[in-house]
Length: 580
Image 1 (cartoon, rainbow, N blue to C red):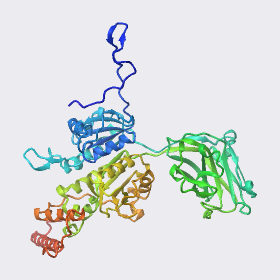
Image 2: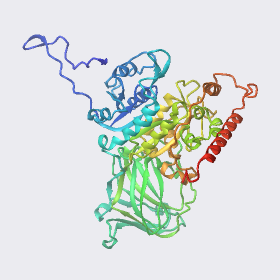
Image 3: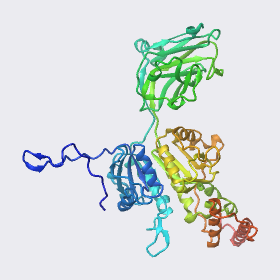
Image 4: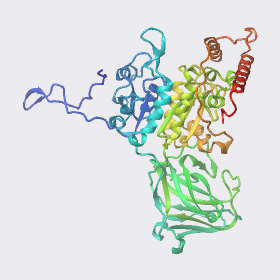
């Protein structure tokens, strides 16, 4: 299928301009193709979530490779302008920001997945694939082309992760670059004393190169902190004019004396504003070298020794000066719990570095309920009283999604797994803030637009790496209709979550093992569960189970009892030693 493209822009020549060779118009120069680099490969790009994610990423300026089973469907859904279509274009978008490429791919085919053309310029992958469901040729609705959850997610995603080392060899890792060297007297001369003597105090400090016997090159900042009359020691650089916008924060390797120090950053915009800076704290371990990472979002806007809630986030592309402080105060005159008056010393190896943290290279959308479904296993009583999706679990979808999750978590690549609660298309009543939790204990709803925006944020957030979490919209009065999620909201959402490798350190259980899908429910039971969903979504009045004469829990308990008794009877028939 030929996909519609916008006409080339006018190159400045009149369309009827003549050349020396005659009246024929000069041929327009061929425009080079747009660059394909640092791209996000979106698998499932024509699905209801995938198409929204493609649009979100393009709006943020990203290059997107939209991968789908049919370029014809891509032309209809991504490039079309009808209902449900995104109105995009191949190449650079009309707002001159994002760049779109379209590729055909079959996630169940190794040959299709291994095509080098598919992975050209790709650095991250977003997995929005799922059951291909729609109208069937013979009428009615169902799974199309055998592309069930088991095939697409339970088999396709593990296949993809098994091939990543070949098709996506550049695995992101933490990197650090020296930006303010502090190894020699000449390099250290850029640092100037800024002790409390400027306000009548008596503290004193200085910086010097580490002695040759220290075993490493670097600087030692040391002095004497006297609390009477002031209570702080400081050292600040001369003007540096550093553009560190491409980095994620400051990295230092330090050896201290167990006290809590501060780092200050003054921006170019604050040069003429006295007592205005950005400030954060860092801890030291007495007598031990330790790496300290200070992300930009840790730095608090401070004016006249008070935090400034209205202050703009730190712009790391406009850094003027850096500073180190030891003070008896933390923020807003609150006491520093880890300081002591008298002599101190802070050793810094090499100097001040800027670091870049890995982003998730795999972001997968999954479903709330997958973890509790794995825990329930074949416990029919527990299943009958859980949320509707766990009761229904059509085609074992929750089991197959969980297998896919495990493949992503075991891939060895930085990842994030987003377990959406009930996904809907409607944004009515919004905007909403989002809630996230772990351990698969929450339920609720989230729109596909909200889920797409969250996935786009995760792709650009080091704080989302290594985390599996459930998400829903917050429909409380503090959220509903108030404002949309902003960058600071996504950051806070990710920061509150524990990495999967630390779950048990924050009171969560380890991930359960995968289990086989349960038997499908009866048609009668399916209708009952669907009715529950209608009530939850406000599409039907609440039902009274007592009036229906149907106690599901009791029925399921009896069924489980019958099953156990039958198994016991069968076991009694076995000859001795049969199960040894």
